[in-house]
Length: 416
Image 1 (cartoon, rainbow, N blue to C red):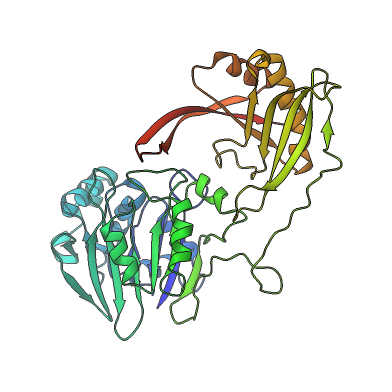
Image 2 (cartoon, helix red, strand yellow; image 1 turned 45 degrees about the horizontal axis):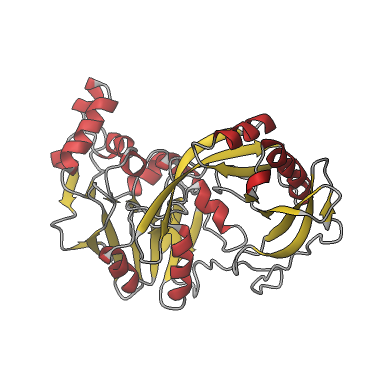
């Protein structure tokens, strides 16, 4: 079985929307821009010949980035101008009404009148389908959890062959566990880096990939910019237009490799001598410790004492974690904690400017700064640096009693 990953991202990234082509005749989630990816996927077929090969369309749910290109497919497949074409669509309840309405809104009246759904299109309700036979495949739908919208994952079993599954958009749920437990390969939504009641996340997803290694090849998909950045130094995420073959021993390997094919263990040399003490006018930064940010993420973290300039009098602490340059990638990488009498705008400003020297040694082009939304003094510091507010973000934590705690942070980007 050949699987072409048409898209690995979501609508808010440079990557194409998550979509897949199986053996040139099954397409899963024809979202916005999917047809363009389909045409890029091979130079051996003309555009129309590619579409003519499609016989089965699977839709996980009715969000625009997962099914809006269905209009273009219907124009080709369901038209009286192409009497030799036909297709089956498996989708959540209400598919016929939604698809016909989209076509009516997106086409001229004369083009829409040429469509004949009754003759050329078979609609199968994913909630009622049971096991569906198609060519050499057996397809099963499974209810997923994507918040308040119906979402179905699909398991595709090749007769006498491998089993692959697609979760669509979903947080962790029984349906997702069922698909992974019963598949050789599973494409799993790992949209962001935060807890969500609509999506799974890349942080937990990487642990899941390691847990199932050797049992199920889990492939992260529907990646946001934050999730893609989080992959750096941890795993190799899949790429748009990647082609996998289920007959290969390991169709997709998420591990980072060096030139010899060995798993890469990065060992960064910390600039301890050069950055031992960074001198300023009001304060100095004295390096006390360097460490890897996490066990799996080898980029360094620097820990500094903030001292009064030219003295050893400690007035606070500062921590800086090196992260990739994409401004969408991280909530923050700077933490400044000053003693009460020294929690001043002038000191915070100088701490940031001194830290810029460390960031530049790692060829970073920006710092990610945070503060509470109502911390007006710190906001003024960031504004005076030339930073700009990106978003107000809700951070989810759990206390010692496992009670959920929500806090808000304003995320600022200081580019240089």
